[in-house]
Length: 267
Image (cartoon, rainbow, N blue to C red; front, side):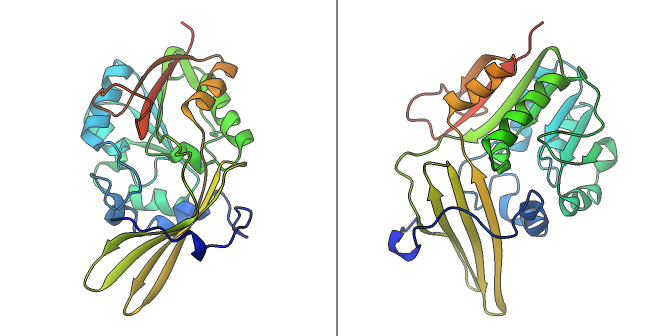
């Protein structure tokens, strides 16, 4: 059940003083697996099951190497490695990468700490697939950073390689408010959200309330519509190959709440 109370949040420009590209990962690392796990947990949107995602990416990669941008704690990367893929993961958060390195199977991954808008130390034309899963592309909080990321992807893809994004479709009716994510015997999880429609920026705090104290987990998302993502891809020389409503291939429609989009580099 989601309850909105728009009057609780003042109308301000979406920003969090001191927030940078590392904040989300560094704050979320300790709870990420507990909250999101394989089934999405308390995520605000439906997300792909790791096995389902890995199988789809393996089909697209055709045995070639895969790059995941925003690899986090490895929810998808480890599953892709299980499929026999050579996986490189980039993340700006050292805390997220430390969590990933401690997991079984992590030694099969190549992990790079750096900005996913301009991944460091990777060879041009190397990857068969570049994946950005579970709304992670929107963690790039400006249109400039997002366009720079897509241009980097185009450079890193081999001829005929694919760029895949999993993301929510922005809701034009979205507004400021508070939602209840989870209620337990000793804990409540809340989300407080402020939306700057003109800037396409969502600023939020996930708040964990317990008997022993409260914790805050800030996030800032710069969302983009599928059409805007297509424009970024086109500008980088990529061509839309397909768009579905989920990882199982459900047709994408005007009512779809999320999309899995695939663009291809020239052969």
